[in-house]
Image (tube, rainbow, N blue to C red; front, side):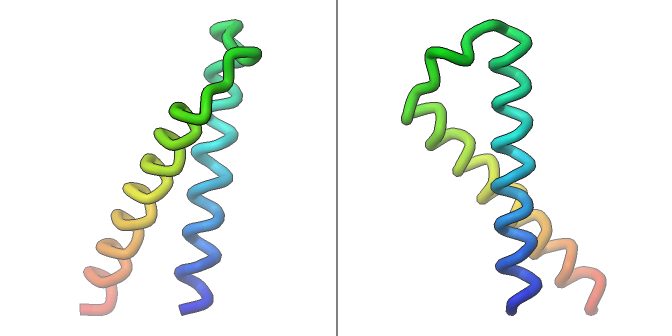
Length: 60
């Protein structure tokens, strides 16, 4: 279970970095919205679920 929490945190961090880089290159870094932060949380959740599914497939 601990490993799953760590992978969830990692996916949050990675998606956050990707969004910051995207905003940096498009020049919209100053317009960080909490709505877009919600998008990044959703992306992280999707990545986390995909990781869980892959983990299940490897075990079976």
